[in-house]
Length: 474
Length: 95
Image (cartoon, rainbow over all chains, first blue to last red):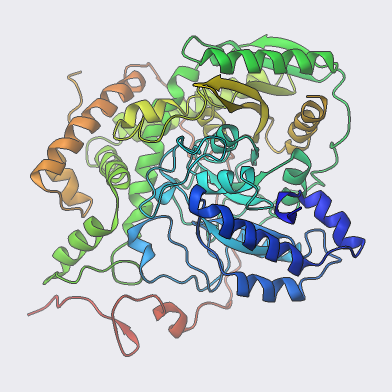
């Protein structure tokens, strides 16, 4: 059987026992990619020779020694492309440095292997905004994998990656994990360095693991976190052993169900799967309590002010001078900027730059950005209040299972509303995981459903403990 | 408050994007729809709430003012779409 179907924990055991080598793993993953990537479109590129070289010298005594990890194509890895699934970076960009998270990953012994597709600059929730190719859901290839880390989730769920890194600004790790049927964890804002992650919305972006099991998410998170002087928002706090709660019971754990997250618009099959999961958690000894997060209704609007505003500023760096696409037909500097950017960016990126620029333009700052920052305070306060009564909060990850390809295309508002349960977690900077919680049958195909577990700031250990207890009992 | 409306060509210029008339009309319609939705926020009384710029407040993060390794000139130039010798090339800006 191909090693590509294995978990990190399984491979570690076999590596330590001397049954396999890192080279075997990379070769098996490469074979799996060659066999199935044509169908799934999860990888934009991969360099097997380079990965084999690294695998051969990887230190097997390290916790991730010689394990290949797929990387979303918005994190810099020295010598590799970093396209952000955009034409503006696809032609001629080679990363001259490692992102902070990649350095940590290497210190754990892991081998970054392969570049995974995404919505262009991480803007979207279907991966259909990629300018470089279509990614399909491994469970039903007529459907989207979710997004924006759709390539990462499709590769892991489709067994053409052992595990992967994604980034999450409004749900971009948790939602594709839910839709593809794997585990996705967004850490507390500031846990993982954003240095070298191409910025989308700097106050919300966070890197995290997408894995086959909850234990693997903990193992991978152990080698991503820590203060980085090159990201002033990275937190100078102790990094615990994130596997500490794995295997522990959840007797007496207080779980909150926010009434605003259990609403009519959610797909009936998703509601049924989540209700069954809650019963399961209760049978494991957790105490279920009804809670309220009263400002939830402001979440999506708040996000769609803050994220485009920050994106419009962050993407100003693409000027066609230092890196990225440069128009060949411009005759003066202004025309150079206009043409280089217009030729390079895709429609959703342009939409968000336009929206963000408008909201930050003279006379509109107070009406939009300042108001959204105030609303963020209210949303954060809601969670603080709730966490005085409960240890974790549980909800569906996404209101619907995977849509058909094209279903939400060119309907930005409908697509934005899909992020309703994940966005508040980013606004409040909290850790959140999506763990598979059953299936819903749609048109004869069983599609995965995700259960979201949200924790207190910096309390990933409890989130992982609850997720693992549920995963094992299912 | 009247319904929010985006003057798309003005905003496009500020954004350093050029749009065809068809693109402009399309984006204008879509973004007016998004702005109408965002009005749920502008309609809400937020009064004296303290704004938060980050979810995890950290302030005045300074580093020690000392030399540290950076890119070489060659690394900086390695991704330039057009260069002349050791410099980035741009279209002529002075006559």
